[in-house]
Length: 373
View 1 (cartoon, rainbow, N blue to C red):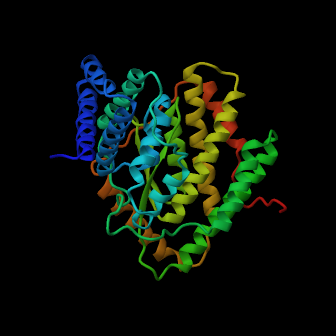
View 2: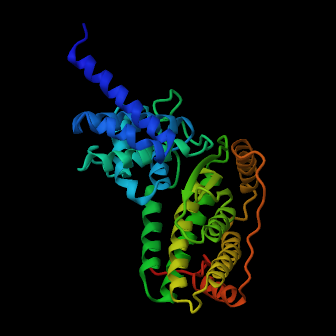
View 3: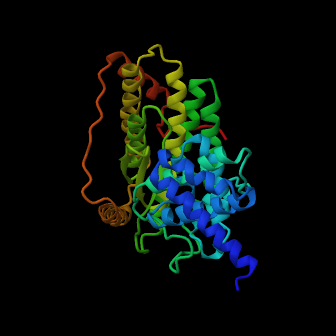
């Protein structure tokens, strides 16, 4: 004879399967199964929703996704629901068995307990929509070990937190100041700190095996293609490689940990600065704005290459370590992204192009310019 607990667990599993079936069948056939689940009351419906979402998330982790990426990939109206579902699912993973990237992303999520709003049927329809959306997300390259995998490391190398704090402070001021000259000087100082630190680290770790890692940077719309080009401009200048996922709106990055930290931080700041500059540009057509952002990325790439060359040490000790790092990055990139094709971004609006170049000039990144601290 089954106990009530077993009966409840069996009911939850059955109702969770109904929700998963509804997600697989699509909106037309979903309502009947949603009504079946709702008829059992809020408590069982909530438990079934949690079980269905947990299974969908578990399969998503197996397809290479990370918690923060799952949140970024769903529509905004489902953000609260998926965040709560991730919090519920990941409570069963011991923190000591999680990769640092997992721990960092989970810590950044403001997860609340999973609860269904009233009335119950519309709330369950949102659950079904989210489960269906998660099921439809594609396979991604595995860039870090999944939850509780035995080879998950306990730490990750990267930029010294004190250096990162200084750089973040400078870029935050550059993003917020209304004065172009001040933004130029602050960005220049940030680039100087980052470039010098990267080369110093390369020299001091010359005797260590050079390894490459990967991460993904999610973009906001619209104009994601030129925004991805801006990320690539920063990545190339910092010895990283990138690949754009146009359907998902994210950029995959491969490089040394230090270079990836610098690339992500600087690319995010420059994207903010370019968006602000675009709001003050005279053109309003899509062609103008697209050309503006493409030109901005083009000029930033030129200036970052110049800035990197300016602070690069003349010591020959840097040559073999950078060569070794480049080989490690290329090998990792080829393993993660076989068969990648190069795609060129074009711009057809001359006035937008010129305005974008001028805006990039305002975001001057020459690292030899000094700012009094």
